[in-house]
Amino acid sequence: MVRNCEFGLLSLKKCKNFRFESCTFEVLGLSKCSEMNVKNCSFNHSIEIRYGQNIHIQNSHIPFLIFSMSYGNYFKNCTINKIFNYFSRANKFENINSPGNFSIILRESLKKYYLKCLGLIIVGVISLLSAIIIFSNNYADSVDWLLVGGLSLMTIITFTITIALYLDSRKMNHLSDNQVI
Image 1 (tube, helix red, strand yellow):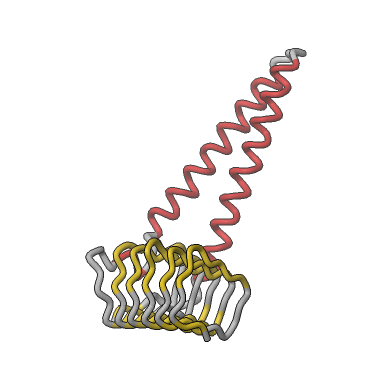
Image 2: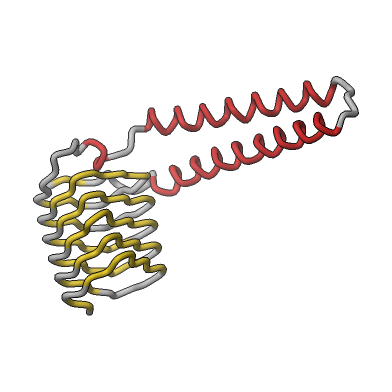
């Protein structure tokens, strides 16, 4: 239990059973944390929850909530000014005061997700085609070989990012949507 403390940047990873009461944070980062309670706290900049579960946040002011791949979290009596939701599902928001649009809480737009994936695939295909065209012109210049290598590396990176986005999406699809009560 931590009470009445001030923190600049506090980042916790793989922590369990922490409780913060009446604390002030510049930024709080919770990565792969569970069974956390945050009550009557204020955040000057943001709180970031990644791969978190069963985190309860009550009576707190949150200027910017970033939560990704998180589920089973509970927000009650909070003021949330801005939200970034990346595939987080099965979270409950009760009595939330927010000037923003709650549609982003409910679910990230699948259309946006598919456009991101399509854009990355197009970049990867263009890079691969460019590398093949340059390679097939039989130039022995070292600059061309560096370009071919760079384009091939860019292709690998974009396809890897696309596959990671797809796997993240599939991992959370079986969970129910977020609820605003």
